[in-house]
Image 1 (cartoon, rainbow, N blue to C red):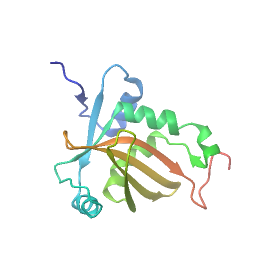
Image 2: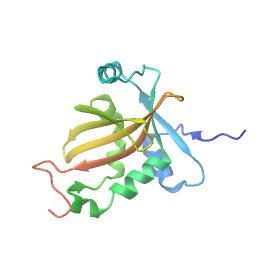
Image 3: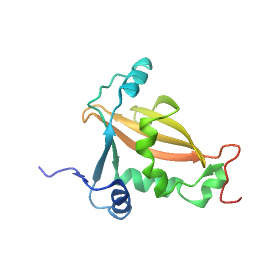
Length: 154
């Protein structure tokens, strides 16, 4: 049986560049493992994971975030376009989020929404909880303007 995906072993910056051009193969990169505080916060919300869960990013999620939330049209939605630099901050977001919420996606899976205020706006990072693989898999990312954040229009 062929492998469904390949783990990327290089730097996150290089993975993001590769993810934007690789469409015929699923590439994944492990960002980090779940922290004790995340495990505890999710437990308080009724979701059980442990420290063996890994935050992962794949090329499909990278392309989705940039294609869906990286255009100047985001300004019309009151949002700030996502860039490669924002994706580079995922390890920081999952390690030191300010707020955490959960909900169900269209397929009924639990998703985690991390919120973190950055210098240029409020970043929302969304992961699916994949029980079988023990993954917290990137789904999307978007940014909203905070009161004093510049936008492309400014």
